[in-house]
Image 1: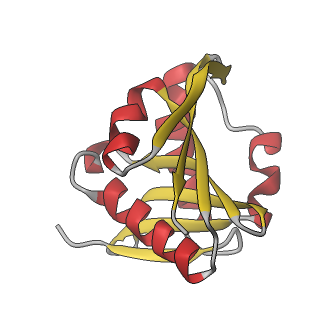
Image 2: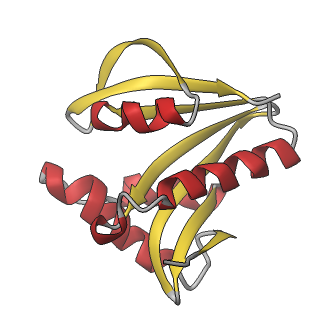
Length: 145
C-alpha cells in the first residue's frame, strides 16, 4: 500500500478527517468524545498526516514546547490501516521535521498499549505511570540533537 505523508495545519481540508480519526481511535474506545477544549490548541500545532489517496488515515500533532523541545501528541492510525508501517513512517517524518528545525528533544505521553511501539522508535521511558483520559500513560523522551 502506498500512502503520502504531509505536514498540515488546522486550516487544511484534511483537518476534519483528522478529528474523526482522533475520535474513532483515541476517544470512542474510552467512551469519551473530543471536546472543544481538546482541540482548542490545534491551531498552534503542526499536524503530520498519512493519506491514502485523498483520505487521511493517520495523524500526529507536534506541539512546540520550547526552543529545543517538541511534544508529540494525539498519534492515531485508523483501525483498518494499523500494523502497516504508517505510524513508523509518520514518526520518521516528524523526527526529520524536528531535526530540520533544530529541535533537540522530543517528549510524549504514551498509552501503556503504545509503549512497545515507541520503544522500537528509540524513545525512553521516563518515570512512573500517570493517568490521562482515565487510563495509564507514561512519559517518554528521545534526544535527537
